[in-house]
Image (cartoon, rainbow, N blue to C red; front, side):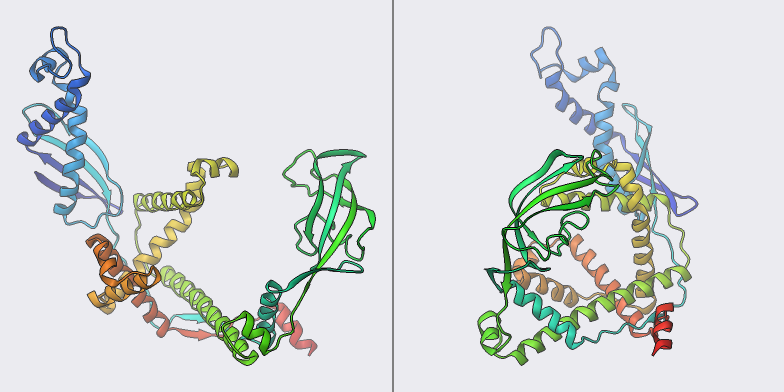
Length: 442
């Protein structure tokens, strides 16, 4: 096999691949063996017609398409390696010559990884984010958990927000009941905003046994077009009111419902967790801000084929994610009123941003000489093993060289991100008009 490379503008290239005659003959013979059972000739049993006779009857071209596809599938990966290019797209294949007894020639137009001219990556300014956790935030989180552990009891007296109302209801528009507007023993958490308009608000203050009308207006964009924007009346009977009875926050409650023994230990654990969550969120925001600035100050010529390849990859990932949830991409697109092309067009800008971020971070890693060692990879694999209850050796057995290469690249990118943040300068967030007004009032 011979491979020649022609570099084009905008980081595109064309590989011209010449496959020798003996390989062409092997491919034609393989195509014949694959197709002969489907070819009938009088006087011969199926699958027993000689290749020479078939080619004489139908021409040698009868096997060209399958033989050509076979050679492209087998020879392109070899040409990829031999070219020495860092190819970042699917190939655009064109057959140039296919004839029995002659070399098979095809071209592959591909995108090549762009070079990046880095902007300033040391001392990038990022917004300082307050990660302090207040006592009120800790108490709010504790109250959420107390509600989850609360005992549900029947409440005497008027319903209040956060209570659960057990109701019968029937809705009508202009005095005519509508489909789907009737239910019995429906459990509705007041304040959940799961019902339209002010439906829930009009139950607040009512008591079990009360019967009353609830007046609402359907939203203009309501999914049932026949009801959109119309006023409706719901005849409601409040059958029961349930509320949560919270246990007192004391050491006994803590020891029975958590892994801690005292309220003090419990509060500290909540504060530590919230602090970690805030710090992780702040780190992510600063990473995004720093990378966005670095991209804006760097230059790179990203070929459209590379963006298309990334977009297709993200579409496949999304499709697999839907499949794990038991939903097909075609069904999702139908529900959302989109086509594959409109969906790709929507995610294309984000695909481009991911490429830009990856390219600049790889460039920083290269500039600073960051490398991922085998020990770094083992540490990542160890974390994966622990999450899945496996040993490091068990994980290693199922990791290919290609996957290890991808992991090393990701580790180098992570080192570049850490380096950028370590050398970043934090600045105070810009004050909004509201902040200035509040300060003036004080």
